[in-house]
Length: 375
Image (cartoon, rainbow, N blue to C red):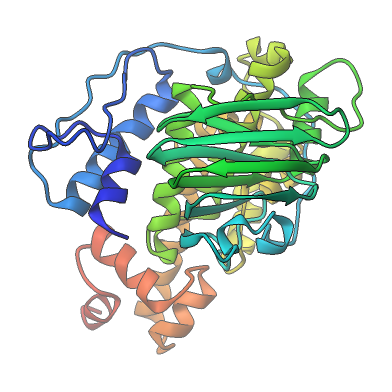
C-alpha cells in the first residue's frame, strides 16, 4: 500500500503537503465513539507514515443517538465468512486493481475491499448484501439505472462521498473516471435483525438506501477504521473490534434512513445472572474464536447491550477482558508446563505464536521465551 493511499485513508491534514491530493476532515461534532476512533487513526497513521508534521485533530465531545444504549433481543451467530463470492466482484474486474481485501480474515458480517476502480459500463446483478461504497481519491462520473423500479441516478462522486449498491436489485451501470474506492459489503441478515430489534414494526427485510454523493462524518470514521483494520496485520485486529464497528455502521445507516433507532434512549445496564456467568463461559472457551455475537447469545443480550453492560459491570471492555484472560492463561502455561510456545498460543486463543509474542512484548515487556526463563 503506497503512502498516498494510506494518507488519504487517514484524512489527516499534513502541513508539509500542498498538492491538495488529500483533504482534511472537519472533526467537530463527532460523538464520543468517533472521537476515540479518530485519535486511534491519528496515532496509527502518524507511526505508519513516519510523519511528525501530521497535526492531531481537535475533536469536540458531543453525544449522538447512537451512543445511547439499545436494549435489543439477542442476534443469531453467523458462522460463514462474508467473502468475495457474496459481492459484485468489482475489485476483480479486469479493468480494476484490487489493493487490499478482508478475505481470509474470518469477518462474518462485513467484506471490505480497497480497489482502484476505472471507467467501465455494464450490468450488476443483485448479491443479497448491500455495498456501502466510499471514495478516497479522485472524482468519477456515475450513472445507474435500477432494474426493478427503473429509477435513474447520476452524479459526480468526489473524495469523502458515499453511495450504496442495493442488496436485492440489479442495475445498469456506467462509470467514467478512475477512483480509489473502499467497498464494504454488509451482511443483510444482520441488518434485518438490528432493524427489527430497533423498530416496533415487524419487517421481513430492510433495503438500505443512500443516494450517490452522500456525506456523513460518522460513517466516514467507521469506514476508515475498517480500512485501518484491513491494512493492519491479521494478528493485530480482533473480530470483536470489527463486529463493534459493523454494528455501529449499520445502526447509523438505519437511523439515517428511517429514524428507527428511537429505542436508543435506554441507558439501562443489564446486570443479569447470565451476564455475571459470562466470565466463566469465556474462561472455558479461551482457545476458541470468541466474538460479540456468540457472547451476546450466551448472555441473552443484544451485542450492543452486552458491550455496554459488560463494561459497566466488570470495568473492562469485552476485548480487554478476553485479552487479559488469554494472557494470564498463557503466562501460567509458560511457567507451569513445558508446552511449546506455539501450542500455548493456540490453546489460549491467539491466532499464532507471532500474535502471542506481540501481545506479550507490549503488555509484559518480554517475549514468551524470556518470561519462561524467569521461572
